[in-house]
Image 1: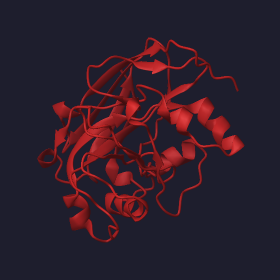
Image 2: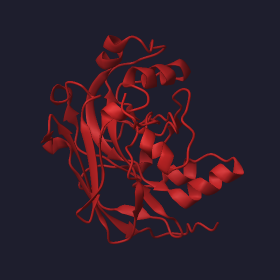
Image 3: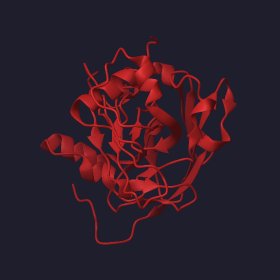
Image 4: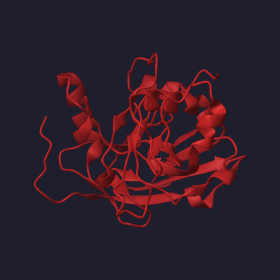
Length: 249
């Protein structure tokens, strides 16, 4: 294991009416995406978790490819986190964390996702011992790429994720730096709840998380063996969110 590593996961289940598979996020260090890199834990001043943990993100937060901008709620500090998304292909329960064959068999395909967070709102929730639902669950808070066929990613623990803002590289690291491997993430989740076909599990983010502002453009991607996968490209701008919501600390 490298000196760096991911640590968290998330799960989402989308309604049948959506064309994109449902999404479920799991967190380890947050089970936002089941696993963050170690360096990301350090930059957030989090304690390294002893086991995976997860939280749920609403399906309404999904932003399919080319379906508009990420909307920043007024009063929030908006942060990005690029992650590898697992799209579940069958029902899974009580998965043994040492059963890598069954864990990989449960994955139907992949995608690249950007987990958006209202960071100042999340920090306030942590301070007050409250859930992170609001900070993670706004509409458009999960831009996703097109589906990546499983055959294009022979080993999900050996791909590189990247994200840039206005052409400046912010995140660029390997999934080999995950604190918890995918079987451990899926095992922990399926001890608690059944994963169903079409569920999406985010597996965590590398170091380099930061803020974006209205007018910024994020571009995310994935490389396998040094080659970028076209299906994994995400390009999305940021605009102000209309409506009644305003975060006040």
